[in-house]
Image 1 (cartoon, each protein chain N blue to C red):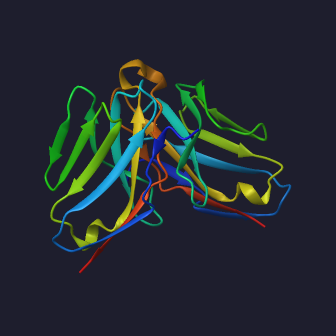
Image 2: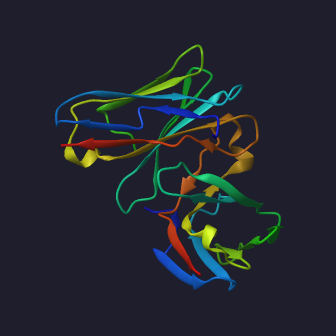
Length: 116
Length: 111
């Protein structure tokens, strides 16, 4: 049972345009959500996160939106740059109940390609 | 450099063999997590250690085992290897309420 779903395996956008990556989750106990970016031959790196007490978090060109009622979150990248081309993983956790057992559940990832 | 060190970077071995993957967490991080990324799969949680003790288990096969040593480095042992065990294996560490920091992974190829 996949608790975190990224239904789009890939996304292609033009440089300067907006990239929107989507993620759905099924576990209502999840209350903390993260996005990781992964380049080939490297480990995933943390990008941005959001707690369930918020519906938006912004960091520079990156904004994450959370819709708890729909169990949906999205990552917006504006403007998109060729260097943003990578695999993006959505992850979720029951942060407040995690403590030292804090475990992330990941989606399968979306390959974003930003064309010059 | 993320501060999480995984060795080796690449490993090619035959079916039925046993291998050991090593992870050194960031300085001061007590938690170590192991994840497996197979083709077309996301990151599948295998197991977590905290300060030497096993804290959580995920989809880890009985042929796989792990441990965390007093110096906090961790080893993931994979035995009786099968072709389907070919994957990227990531280690991540964490301190306190911070997020994960991942290593660059070990690519295991079973032939």
